[in-house]
Image (cartoon, helix red, strand yellow):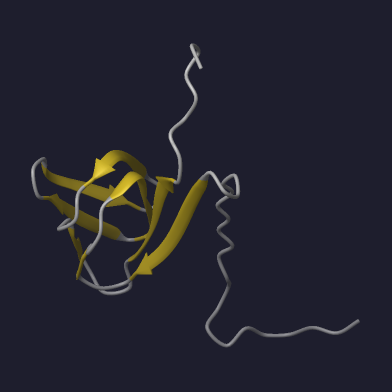
Length: 106
């Protein structure tokens, strides 16, 4: 049996599944202050480690801590994220539909 030691410690596996041809998904990881430069129809902010303050252009400020998440519909560009301390890490998932969803009358 062989063993290995990871240089930077344990890994985090994060998967996003969307229907091909119907949606796109983009996963971003942040460890420092950043300005989100694009909007999305649906976004998920996930606290991986430490805490982040989120400044939304039209909806005030929120704090996300380790293990917490915040779903946001119709994210506008210009959201600012600020870590509260060194070592903080956040994952953001941005999802957009490529075509409108069918309705019950379609």
